[in-house]
Image 1 (cartoon, rainbow, N blue to C red):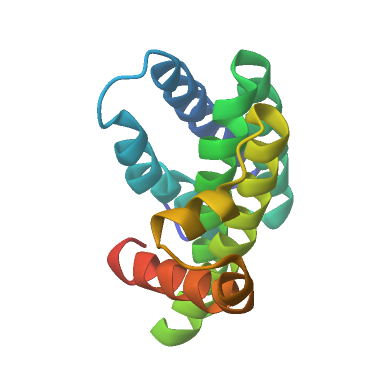
Image 2: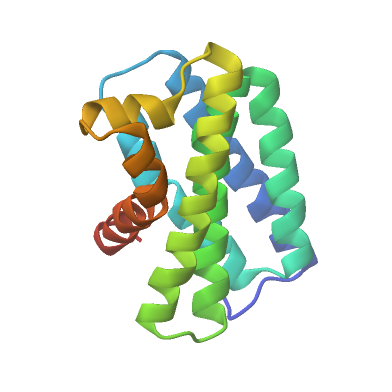
Length: 167
């Protein structure tokens, strides 16, 4: 394809990537071992490519359409898997399009993942009643007082390490 997509190609490409997200949501419903990791690793590349090639309006239309259709199929998969893949892919695409250096891209992706982690922990707490923060503090064997003071550093370190491994 050329440097940028025209209007028709952009809409068609948005539809194709939305179809990829729909297929990913359907696969998540079957709970195949390892499919969630594969989706979180590979699907952001599609959103990234769209953010690189298409106008921002089409990227926004794609994001909203994918989230809407995927949430109709399976709300929890849409929020916990599709939203992060779209957000990370678009953020990476915008950073590359803006010609940011590698360190700035890692910081931007870390901030996005950090926000998505807190959003997902809130959603998990509301849906299932499980408090991820207290569960993590119990697993790490850290008291609530010292854990609450250091949780931002811990999450930031986890997300920064995750961004070094995956794009």
